[in-house]
Image 1 (cartoon, rainbow, N blue to C red):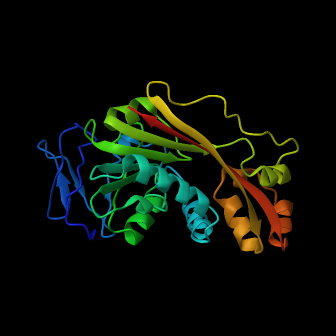
Image 2 (cartoon, helix red, strand yellow):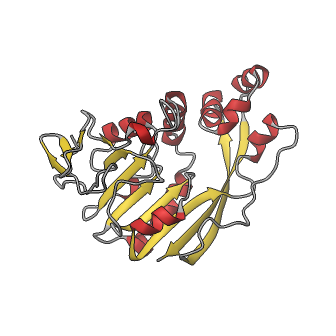
Image 3 (tube, rainbow, N blue to C red):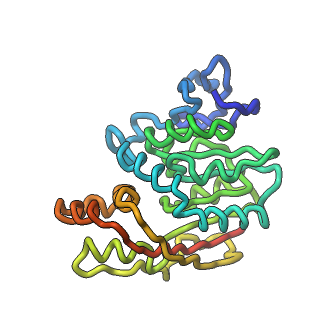
Length: 272
């Protein structure tokens, strides 16, 4: 059970009625019920909304990402997006991490006077997030049909997750902000160059958001230096590149003593 004493605001994914929490169960007036797991999260992904038996990142990817992020390689990104939150959005409003994974970015937005939510379709990730970051509210759900009322959030952010403008705009309060983090053109280019014969740079021309006002756009680029092969393997395992990796390349990476790779992020902040 979460340490916060404030009941989260969810709506039923089946009938869109408000969910009331009692006796570790969320229930709507139509008697649809969803039990809170022992870790503190709630699964609001009905089986008819699943496209596979275990959607989202698998357990190996989730574990690799947590191990990698815990080493601080993406700390400059954390510092920048939380600075933008402090400048534009930090108040007593609700915060939503769309595609929260194991909660690394979610919990960094928790303040004394706000409520922070994280949603991901991967149950393995949400379970891990809820267990570690008990001051935040986590649920399993699909980003295309989010279990929240309209205009609930003052600040929504998406780090390397699908950006669904219509649904995010529905949830965003008037004058609220949406922050997106997507790959800039050279993100992990050195790693990609080991995997693909012709490594292409990311296309950053197209913005996924059209209906909201762009407040600021910036690029964050820095070099990551790896001195342990485990960190390189974790970086590979948490990306889609892992599915393209040969056994020979995996062996080569495990034997690498040092490897340098760029982190290159495009950060956009929009306002409703």
